[in-house]
Image 1 (cartoon, helix red, strand yellow):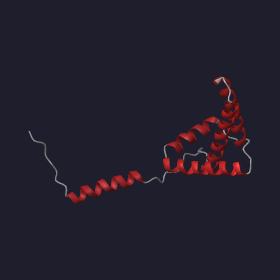
Image 2: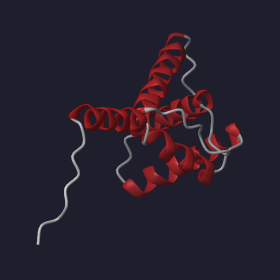
Image 3: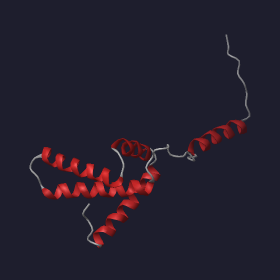
Image 4: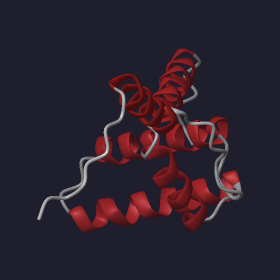
Length: 124
C-alpha cells in the first residue's frame, strides 16, 4: 500500500524553511523578571575575578584554605551588590545561554578591570 504524497511547489518549501530559520534566530525575548542587569552583572563579575586573582596571589598551599577565603570574598561581594547567590546563579545561567550578551558583559568586565588597574583601585 502506498502512502499518498502531497506535492508542494519548491518555492513554498524554501519559503517555509527560511521563515522557520529566521523565526528561530530572532531573540527579542526579554530576560526573566529577577535577572540582574547586564551592567550590574559586569560589575559583580569584575569583583569576582579580582577576588580570584587576590586569592591566587596569596599562593596558599591548601586548596581548602583558598576556597574558604574565596567564599568569604564572594559573600562580601553579594552583600556589596545586594544580591543573593540564587539571583546571581539564575542570571549567570541566563546570560550563558546567550553568547552575544555574555560577550558584551565580559567586554565591560575587561574595561572595568583596566580602569581599576590604571587607578590602582584593585581592592574589593
